[in-house]
Image (cartoon, rainbow, N blue to C red):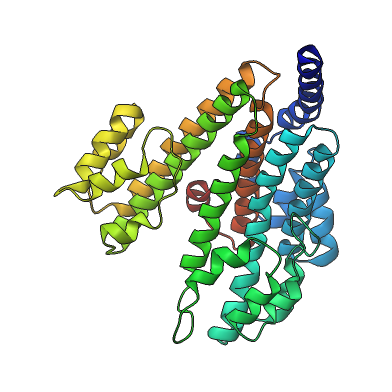
Length: 360
């Protein structure tokens, strides 16, 4: 029985390696992004994708004249890949794929809520923008048009009745008056995503669980540190308010440790000390003047993203028959797609090369 399970696991990961390493090998190198950024127009930028797996984006854009439709096609193809993988892996890996797919669904729900909010609450925007949302089932069956056209937030919840998202959002519905901002809803959905991924990891064997928790824990650390930097730099939030935006499950920085640092007289100094003890590259941030908030944030994100990329690279060079290949692909492709769409928008709005470099 044990030998059968081992053989089954090796077979599953051999399949994933064959599918995903090929796709990882085609990830756009920095040189392509640089050439696209130096292009004189969006049309010229598309030409640099002709010999890549993203060549179809130019075709979509040419037919529609709408960059958002190209983005929707990109979104759709990644969901299709996750579905295709799901057909050929065992149950515990299916659960991981399902949990990872929640991030795509949550991004789609955020888009629905944004359209609803600006139309119903702010009385701006157009409901016709639902054409830019993914309308097929990702994980749960959700009525996209129903949510966008809902008369109230309670009606939105009714459309989410048979999904876990209703219980995530319901406690945040104001008792009196309209919803003033979508941030609490977005934040709760983000935390829900990480909770679901962490929960599904418990079904993996010891080797896979250690690998997955390490990688996800690093990402949660990065997300929490980025949130602290942003909210202490731009907003005057009390420590207890900050506690509500931190995600449980970090690897190097337990949520309680970060909150303790924030309660100190000089929270910046304590947080920087904590980070330097784990990530020496943080030293570059300390030399920046406190007033250079934007530069600090950009550098922070660059440093922390590099830490995550180093961990992903380490996984790809290690044992190929682990969950590492799937998680590595997920993180790599997410970054590539984000960079690509940011770059195309940079070209569409004729943003300078220097500003574009910072954006991607």
